Length: 448
Image 1 (cartoon, rainbow, N blue to C red):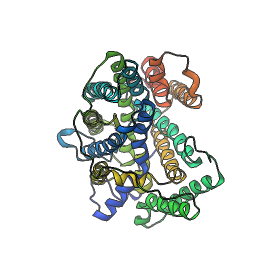
Image 2: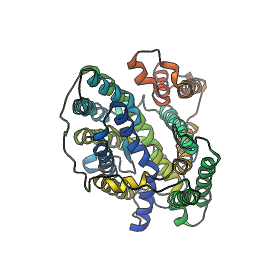
Image 3: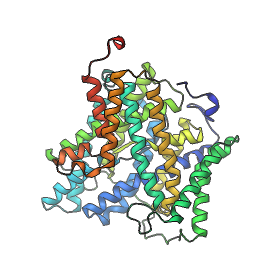
Image 4: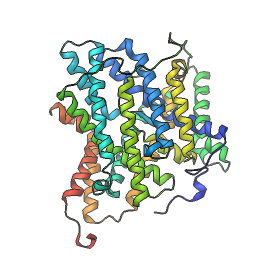
């Protein structure tokens, strides 16, 4: 499989776009990720009864995402991959975080005690990722092209469910699957496809923003978007380190620490896909340096998150799809993304406006971007010479990962720790790939 040709990128990794194109490119990354950043706090807050704390938790989720994204792009002191690696609240931690919160609640704790335990174990758990980042070179067997290709493919295919659910109207929507919802999603998707095939770089660069704006306009004209008055929000949301205190329990820490390990594997896959799309090497010393910096950036971002009152962060996969769609890989755009997200976090009203974009409109955009992530994984696998052993590993890993995704009730009778670790396609399929790759003997012809 050939590398991307220069024509496929409008701005390369170290190019400096003018402020206006950079702003448009940054805005598209934010629109692709905004819902993903604020959804985990909403879910956790709803399940644990943290309604009064939600405005602060959402503001900090956005602010920390901005700080982490800025660090990943800027790469100070080797912290960060030096690429567009948008940091966002990780869905992978949902099970472990909820388990920690419910543990505190079962002990009679209120909202502050619940959050103190969650952020305490998440803060200490982040050091797992920080330490692992220093040993990426020694883990080359674990992060082989075969395993990373499988993980990236699973990331993309598992996220597709989120996009198609939004096209239908969103999870639990009363009008789920209504023809109007499907038409809106299809309209946005088609608009992105047509603009992306334009020979004019500006149209391709702004394809997602234009499609979302056009879809929102059509939704408004058809009565599916009714602008709501903004809720009463503070003018400025000021970060307060360890606002809820700090607590610890081994029963809550162990699952969180294990999920940090899984998150590291996911990050390696996302960074590899980003390198591929940005026309950077995916082998050798420069590649390993990017992996070390990127995983360290994730760990530092999680430390900042737990300190300020946000849940663990990770490198978002969907932004690789934005790079593919727009042809903008410039890390300087990542600095714009970081600044804008920090502004959203400090000024809650800005984020509240974006929340009004209809789910089918967002779904039409995210569906094609998630598909692009899966394609990036397939491209990495296509670069690998798949012998009988490797084909067996791919088949077993994809089968288990996609099978768990297709039947989420499969593990309901297993212990809670097992459910927390293996209830997603990425963790179950990714760990299967790693274990098989480490344990199955290689074909004689493939031995070094």
